[in-house]
Picture (cartoon, rainbow, N blue to C red):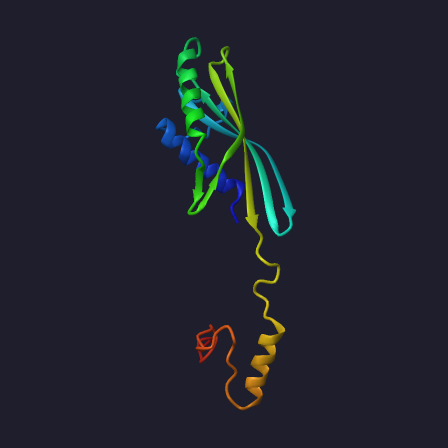
Amino acid sequence: MITIIDTIRALSDWIEGLFGEPPTTKDITEGFERPCTYIQPGTLDTAVEGGLRHDTYTMDVIRFASRTRSGWLELLEWQVKLTEALETPIPVRDLFVVYPEDVSFDLRREDMVLIASLTLENFQVLPPADADAETMEELIGVQEIGLHGSEPVHPRDPGGDRPGRHGDHL
């Protein structure tokens, strides 16, 4: 299953590709060099809906300008860059992407910071609860083969390559 951690890592890689530097992992109280970007996860809501897991994440991508007194134009340029980049999906894993929705921007002149707030929704098919359980037909088939004098062959492994067979457990 794809988790919020996978999504944050993908968003971090995406930001590094966009801004040319990875997001900072330092908290504001620890100090950091400007310009930099910080990812702040917000809420995570998870629901199960008809065999699907539905995760909804809110994230803030916070971009600090290089200077605290000036840099308004720099922030506007970053907003344009983010707006254009958010029009395409963000790859998380092979064949799995997220599409940012409900994107909003907050430019704060007093701190020279741009905050892009976005919502990411993730729908995944849940594996069956008993995916590894054997069916009754498989169990009966194994029992019948064993009653007729030959070595039982597991229906999911007709070649007999299951671990623990033919002395492999020794």
